[in-house]
Length: 189
Image (cartoon, rainbow, N blue to C red):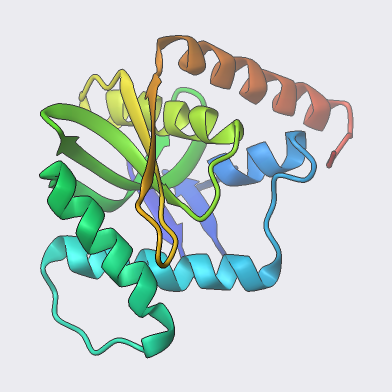
């Protein structure tokens, strides 16, 4: 399987075929889950910094992001995080979807698929389940634990752990619902 991601268009392709991405599917099915353009831009900037930090890359930071960077550093040190994958594009050829997970890491001795959030929502569990299923298919890595890390300046990181077995089944139900809605011509919400 060849999976490609175009950051300019935010499109995922598996063997050249355009496939939906995890966040688009969730956004379609769960109105109100999407963030404003400002928060999306802020999230992209923070995620880029977290990825550079996880890779050990040096960079000059904008003071506007100092609080986010410090919150990430404190979280990593407190949890002895060892990264395996950072900003990894994954996809499922079998189920025809793609996405980019924030990290696969050992956190507190547990292998987890993880996502950084400004605000953790109920949809986070399904997002992590989708990434875990894609990892199982494309990387043959069995992941049953998810971790959402809520990072905000001046606050201790909030972590929410997920046991993903049931969430994987629920993700598949969401994906099936999304496909049925598309087949019936229902595009959004």
